[in-house]
Structures are given as C-alpha cells and as structure tokens.
Image (tube, rainbow, N blue to C red; front, side, top):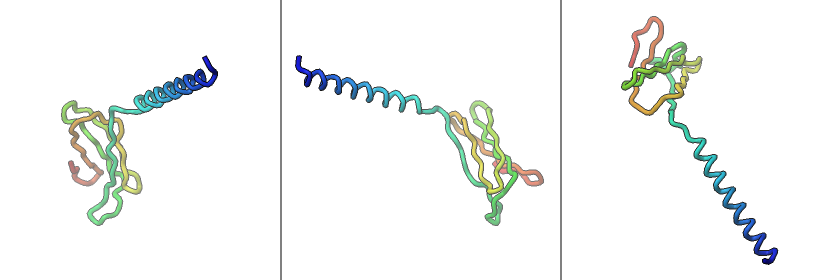
Length: 97
C-alpha cells in the first residue's frame, strides 16, 4: 500500500466523520416550541406599556404571559404547536382577545 492511497483514504474518512458531526449538531439545534412576539400600541399608535399579554393553548388550557415593555414589545416563548387565544389586558381597560 502506498502512502498516497493511505492518506487519500484517511482524508475521505475524516471528511465523512466531519459531515456526520455537522448533521448531528443541526439535528440537536431543532426545537419543538415556538414564539409569539409583537408590539402593543394605543389607538393613536403610541407604545402601550404595562399591558399583560397572555397566550392560552385552546386544546390544553396552558398559558404563557408577559408584560409589554416601555416600547410596547412583548415575547412569549416555549409555546407548543397548536391554536392559541391571545389576550391583552391592562388595568383600567377592557381586555381584548
């Protein structure tokens, strides 16, 4: 066996192992949950601060909540696939779903 063919086979094996590691890392990076993000504004278009945003899974009843920031932004993470009712509540105002 020549050193050239051994080196060639070693490089092919290393390339194959590297490809498997890349595929494995991509598979691990996938998630089974989703995120809802958005902005809450007043009727005049200004950011609505202090609004509690709640997403409730219709099938299971589980809920995730967060409060809108001073810019009116919110993020709800860890949501399993499904249909959700999203409600917006602020003290002194009627809730909106």
